[in-house]
Image (cartoon, rainbow, N blue to C red; front, top):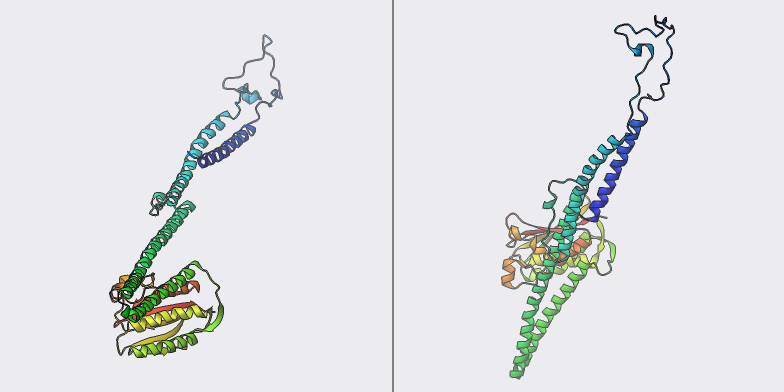
Length: 373
């Protein structure tokens, strides 16, 4: 048994002993006052003496109590029996209660030690049984913390794996281009163009990784200002519209519902631009991307809808994870899968949300919602 068990045990036991002692003393102090009754008072009329000078015997059926005579008092023991009984009961009660509390806390301590030792799969909720108290709530909080830690560690490992994989290919091409330049100097211009293209890809990848890392870590100054979300969306749509027109895709705006809000204009611009460019990229030739604003209670939302192939229902939540590109995008080698992850981090930094759902008739709808104010 640990120290906590003995602390609970001693406190509860002493409390019960003091209670038992108080009850025993109260019973002893409030007992009938038999020792101070004094000599019996003489009867008001003394009977005549007997023939031989002795007092006559009481009549049949009479009792000395009728004439004020009391039997000799019986000795009254101090409250040892109530105290002893209360001590035994309190001893058992204190031991059970201390064991009940200490067992769960000992289990929590073991779980914390296991988690600190790297066993992230440790959970304690089941060992709590059907408890419905603060210790059970603490166990549930521990399980949520362990789930979050495991998700973060898994994400970190996956991120390191994906970064190394994304950097391996351009580095290999750079090395091959350098070898070809040494072997075939006449192709130097071609190889230089390839080197510039690959170094540009690596620079964009590193830049997006740094942006995502800063957002997740909360590093950097938030330049919060009052802005009109509709105006910001209109500016982004105008910039992206040039690229969309070259791909045969139109951008249709239905704005006017969003209100003023406070936010970092640069970060929000990047988040909305990522979503809009992604919608244009997946739209078919001759299709269109619809952008509309709406107000729900105390949040203002921007919906970006396309008529592309959509996303499998099982992948809707995963598309906002770093380096997740889906089956089709991965085969086509499109991007790095960081744009929507940056969008999610920007929305979380502004206490907003971003969700995706499949559109009836085909396509995807991405909703970005921000608190008004």
